[in-house]
Image 1 (cartoon, rainbow, N blue to C red):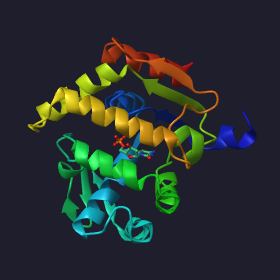
Image 2 (cartoon, rainbow, N blue to C red):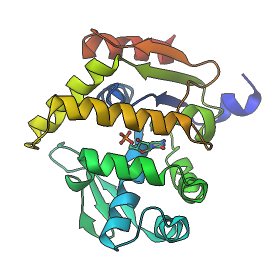
Image 3 (spheres, rainbow, N blue to C red):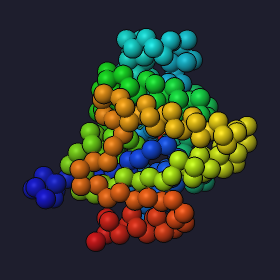
Length: 228
Ligand code: DC
């Protein structure tokens, strides 16, 4: 470890494909450690949502970039400890940004380099004592390259589709398992093939394949990386 890494606020990066359980695991690990949490995917989803609301064509890179630069995104943790709300330009968009359509829009705009640049400082600002768990695609490779702890969480495509299916069903959304599988595969393909910050394990990341693993075991495995 370099001297800066020793003194800097610690970060645990958790990257991986859609539906690998990053959200669930990141939340549980952040809570166990008493660290802050960054759901970077929610930022891309929020920009995609704001662009849609403004009638912006998602292939218009300049307009989407302006939108990324000006959209106000606030995470608000409810006092009762329920799901963190995502407020986009003053509107609670928590439910709207969670659909697969919003995920696909996020993935499309996330391939625009200037959009990623616009969100860079905002993401870095989440690094506060006593520590940060950062969930995304490029947390360990681009945003927090000096993070002392890096995880790449994955699972088979079938299992990831099943998990996403359960999650969306629980939210009362109408979904089909077969279409979810193809949407997830298409999204991963786009996230991994893009030129900027493609989805891939960071150098030195521990790759955890969670296929068939209960959530508690994954949490314990990840916590062990930070604690020992
Ligand atoms: O994690 P998620 O499913 O909420 O992310 C939605 C999309 O946002 C994902 O398909 C790609 C993009 N994304 C990204 O490019 N970089 C990140 N750090 C997080 C998400």
